[in-house]
Amino acid sequence: MAIQITTELLGDHPKLNDISINGHELSTSWLRDGDGLIGFGEWRTTSVFGPNRFSDARTWWHQQLANLAIQNSVHGSGTGPLLFTSFAFDESQESRLVIPEVVIGQKSGKSWITWIGSDHQPSVEVRTNSTNSGEIKWSSGALSDEKWKAQVSKAVEQIKAGNLEKVVLARDLIATSSQEILPSNLINYLVANYPTTWVFLVSNLIGATPELLVRLSKSLVTSRVLAGTIRKTGDEARDLGLAASLAKSSKDLEEHEYAVRSVANAIAPYCSSTNVPEVPFVLHLANLMHLATDVTGVINDAATPVDVFTLLQSLHPSAAVCGTPTSAASALIAELEEMNRARYAGPVGWVDARGDGELGIALRTGQLSVDKKSLRIFAGCGIVAGSIPEDELAESQAKLTPMRTALETRV
Image: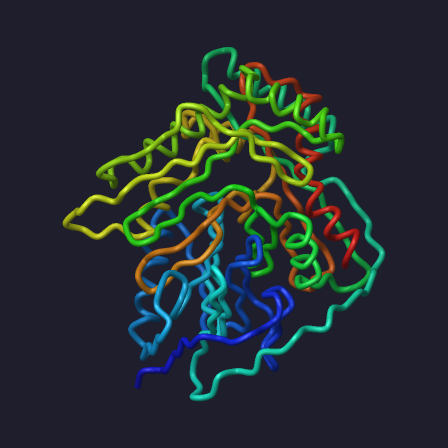
């Protein structure tokens, strides 16, 4: 017997990150600048592994949809049943799929609610924020600062020797707390302080990514590519000068070109037309500036339909999180990082019943432990021939700032 799932419009309600549903724990989020999706409870979950994990995810999702009697009076992208996904960077590691019991969405002034298995719309309430402040202790992850800089030097040597053009090296830090770390408090901090990023939560992976790997809406595909970074000072006039220097930096432009090229080449086979701007723009975030390019395309009328899983299979890993060429960069990452990235730098976001969706790259990210008393945070830097280890370390520290301050400010 099919299980009922209903989507209806909502009236007035608080901000998405202030909402709670009685009897349902916060399980997923995808929020940006006041709009997005937030999920409660877990109706179905599973894990996928291996080289076919994107197609296996599609198969599992379609199997779950086959068991649902969908009543959707709202329509549009992001309405109806939703799958939240968090894929591992490496195919051998665990990727997580979650279908929430209740999802509340908001876009352009319209709000809706989707729920599974009941004739009655769940009651939407305002959540009472917890302000517990446990003691936080930080420790090095896989590599100390000095060892990580040494690995950056080794990567530069490999690049100068002509073995590859670019590699992204990541590092991690570990925070332990005397009290349970609440995902809702981290999300509230990130939403308030990084409103132009996509704030996500899937299976205890939390972050605020500025990089949209892929958005598929009907036949339009969009990818926001970031590569090339400079830290803000807080002085507006000085930061404008830094932005101008970033836009002219040969090292950063080289790094950015590799990332844009990898994305454009990945989507081209599925598109009747693509648009790749010749010059990047400077994206201003709360503490950093990035070179950014929005690559777009129109999906062609192929005999085999193209969905977001098809695009993920082609796009991941992009040069923005791996390097160029991919095989050489992957091998060097495995040699030098000395850690398991898990779901850091993997695709994270949502997919709807039509195969449309939005998935970012899991950056500015923390992975909560099962007992929620420790948080492992990550940052990565694109290494090219002109990279300087001390500068890359400073960049990584800036990229760790969002999750560090979210944890230290509101635990």
